[in-house]
Image 1 (cartoon, rainbow, N blue to C red):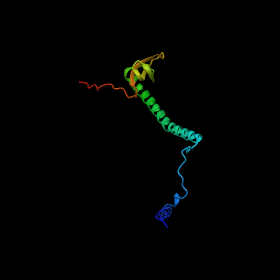
Image 2 (tube, helix red, strand yellow):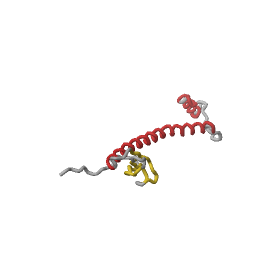
Image 3 (tube, helix red, strand yellow):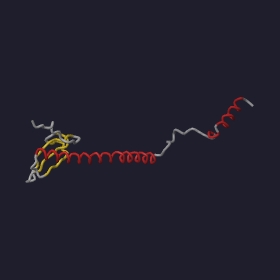
Image 4 (cartoon, helix red, strand yellow):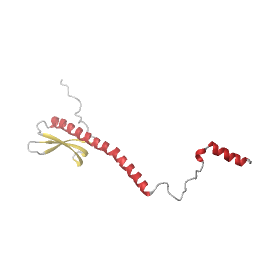
Length: 131
């Protein structure tokens, strides 16, 4: 018996799970085109399912915040207004972002204040302390 035969036999006994293993043939792809397409579609759908709810939630929160901030600003600057409306304008009077409008008795809109890209409560400045 040579040393080579003994080492091969020893290796097979040491790793029986490798018996009959042959490396992958590089001429044939590991997965079919259809399987790759299905996997890519699953990844895209998974990403959409993760991202879209976050975007919709953020838009809803921004809309509610803008509406509430607008009603506060209209109550402060136009106390006789019949209502208020906040909307996102690309080229509004206050620039890009949420704009606040007061609605009068004749349903005319008057621009009140820009609420910004991310709406926030309007800053009225420091409180006035009577002397």
